[in-house]
Length: 304
Picture: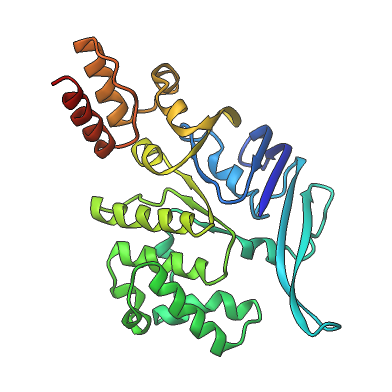
């Protein structure tokens, strides 16, 4: 699935809030099987942007175009076939036809998604979406089994009460509920917020696996260490506009850019900068401590 955002602006206005543009003149292309981090200061428009990616918000100006394919049953040939589709969302549309199809293919897991669990068992929570999309209960139950295993929990969790699980387990169940809809794009808003280091590591490892399987992953977060280690592309938003869009390492190693926007420099980048400055070295940037250790060991071998 590909998404093309063409010159969108979203204006909020109410009796309480003065009229303002949350995002302005955004142009963006999301290709298949990308791994993207969306970053920026608080209030920069990150959440408003992602809510346009599955039709939760309609742009005040501009359009959002979705190119995708779905499997449909052909009555004439009596077989399943891939059908290519294009759907455009723009302000002039009073009613968006088949919007649920887009929302199934582009899943959003909002911050503290575990608080959205409401059924008495994990299984019922996971099958809620598929059944409401018209899938038979027997098939939905099989989908639930696949989804719970995919998020790293065993089948015994299906019969448990969601409210008896740990915070990390609840978040996995919430993600399983989205996975049960078979999305092509998954968007996560602050996915590691409130989790301990082990829980964060496990969630991010899950995202890496989903990415390897072909799902486009988009993470909205303030944690630049996680973004640096896991994503391939950064979209940097400030005051409702995209100020940078490019390879993750290139953007997050730009110390001046991060300082100007009051964002913390990733720890590994900061460490390399300090070592290079203090010892007049030229250690190249990397994305995590394991890569850094390998580089240092290799440099030691070469200097022997």
